[in-house]
Image: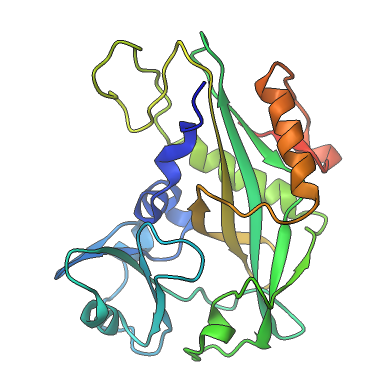
Length: 267
């Protein structure tokens, strides 16, 4: 049994390529090379960005570590360290706010491919957390307390009605673009980006961070986290229910109608 199924989505740059219109303009930076990864980045005038707040994120670094704030893409390029891979993104326009504070949202996606099956099942958990920042949001501020979520000081609140179906539609669209072909167990190397052995049950759990638009609708995927924190009490129940699915229980819940709190199959 393998738990590496969703390894395809561990890299920020890969998420931007697959998610495309669900991601902010995203640039991959390595040394002096700066490559636009999605459509909105390719259509962006790289010279006309001095009035935006930019996030420079080092690949492979978790939580707030490795994230710095800048006033332009050029400033990001001037700040990179030799031999390290980064992505740069401008702040999304007019994000959803509660009582003046910016909100990041975390949900959980679980993928499963059963031994002997050519298919993959993906489930979205009905509970998640809106993480409300501790400081009022200011569009042009490069204060980390305003723009970057602090796990120790943020307030957590549950999803609102209507947000889950939009998120399920978004994730279904992204998952449909990935290559889920099965490789042979005797193959020396994976023939596809996702290492999935047809003779082995494979699964993966990732946390997805996203930003809602000003109306509170899920809009921009920021990151797929392969090692999500499971600190909330209800996540223990989530993991137990995930194990039920791995060991034989299959779900086919209509997320559009029931908005359930448990796992619902979306792909």
